[in-house]
Length: 258
Image 1 (spheres, rainbow, N blue to C red):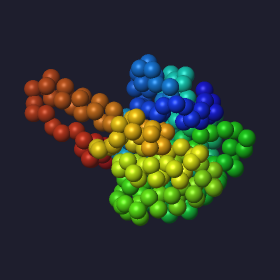
Image 2: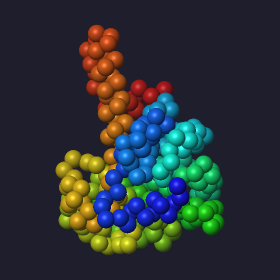
Image 3: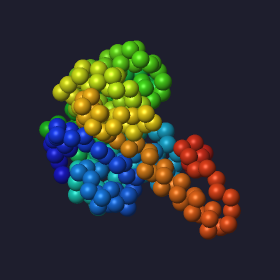
Image 4: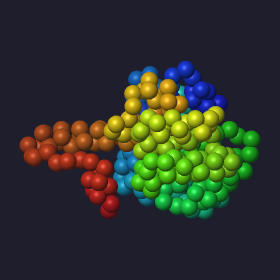
C-alpha cells in the first residue's frame, strides 16, 4: 500500500487509531484485528531485537525487523525510526530510502534532545534522496514528552518546530505527551492542514473529543508491547512458582543494556 493511502487515512471522518506493533507476529495480529494501517513502536522493535530503547538499535537490525513486518502486512506500514539511527542527514536519507524500497509508506522521525535544525536538515536530505518516490513523513517533537516547556510556552515551541519541519518536507506532526484539550485544539488549528498525531497518555481526552479538537491520529506508542512483555513476565513467574517482578519501561531497558 502506498504513501497516498496512508495520507488519505489522516483526512477521514474519524480519528486514525494506530495500535503500534513491534515484530512480524504483532503486526499480523494488529492487521487481523482490523487496523487500517500498521505502525511500529521503536521501543518495542528494539526490545524484540534484544536492544534497549533510545536510538541504540543498529540500523541493519532495524531494517531487518522492518522487512519481517513488511512481509506479513498488506495495509500501509509506517515505521518509527527514532532519530534516524544517525546524526548525519545523508546517512539518514540512505536508510529511509532503503525502507521505502522494502515497501514502507510512512515514517516517524524525531528531534529528541537535539537541535530542531538537525531534524530539518534530515528531512530535507530525505526528500532529496527520495526524488519522486512518495513517503508520509511524520515529524515528532519531544517538547511535551521530555518536559522542555509547559502551557503556552510548550504550544509556542511546538508550533515553532512544526513550521520548521513542514518547510523542510514533513507531512504530519507527532506531539507525544500533549494531553490538555485546549492545547491540542490550539496546536491542531495552527497546524492545519498538517495533521496532528497524539499519543495515548493518562488524562488524554476521548477519541471523539480528540477528533473534535482537531487531532487526526492517535498512537498507542509502547502500550501494547509493554503490556505483552509484562504479561509474559507474570506468566513466567506463575509457571516457575516465583514472585512476580515488575516489568516496565525501565526494567526492559536495564535487562537489555548488555
